Length: 463
Image 1 (tube, rainbow, N blue to C red):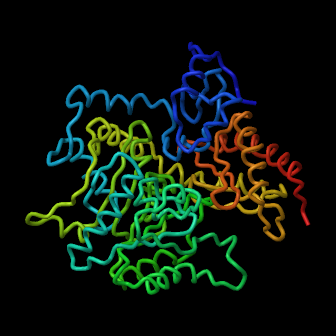
Image 2 (cartoon, rainbow, N blue to C red):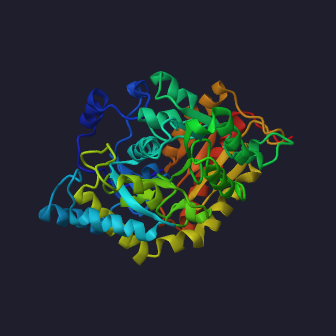
Image 3 (cartoon, rainbow, N blue to C red):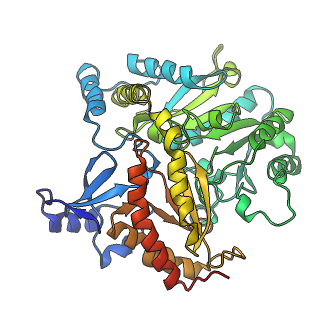
């Protein structure tokens, strides 16, 4: 059961009424709250948050893969308050201010290779949109105006702007907004668990080359990939995958965009996921943990080679956002990076990711658990109907399993995580980077009985 503390002073009934009447929540079935309460989170501290009734929950998703240092970091927020007293806001449209300059230089000092140019955004979707637009303008400036297409992976999520949505490989998220920005092309992802028998792992990278040839190399401008793919359940790359992708991009003059909105800032135990998997992209997109979620901030980080055509004469990248590089957010980001370094956060993740994985692996004795995969503090459990055959659940069964039972029951017992079926059904965990093995034991104490009950409810048996 969720731990209970005295409720915060508030008129809960009024909050519920106002939420139902006025608050349009993102990616939310609003009709679901006709009969049940809206979950209203009112306080956070460390790895935990509390609702308006005083119930405590372990934040096993770091809010949305972004509260990397946990909640309640007033010391970091203070950096923003101090900055507001000095300069509350100025735009980075043709102007600079000290915090944006310092943060850009700080980020450049942490990136691999020559990724030295930092273009700020307000969030991750904007960073991806910026990268796709930059790719188009870059190729026009370098004499390849037809290189407008982007290759991404099936089931991958790259954001909600129309350009980013064209790269997103989730059909249900695309169809309501079609026609999309043209140019999105898709190849198989790296879900090795479901790789058909007899198909070599090497084919996953070669599929990118095949698609470039099919589309015509003169029309393909970029390949966008996450180091670990989120949607579908933390698909990790096979050995050598990204090194081969880099070779393919070089062969055809295609930009390699590493979408690290989730995978940067320690989530995989390194500042950038591309560092963990030892490849050098042309562009990195980032957000979320760059401020520990204390303020909205994102960035597109570009190599000197790709930035070079924009740095001379009367050329400019014709793109921007009002609040990108906001002084308050930049100050908070600098304080967050200080905390990552001073508190040894990356080392902590590397030290304890094995314990997190071992805990999840221990759940394999439950028949509904088909696969465990991921990296760092970014892990998933795939749920199956038959472990021997890897048979998955039908859409109706997944609806009953995930939204009819798992999501609500895990929350009721005090664990916030993601029960997702954008691919095959998974439970996804992305705890704050300060989490310890003791926290993992707490997670297991909730996950195990709920998965055992799900096994019974869905009539899953070991063959």
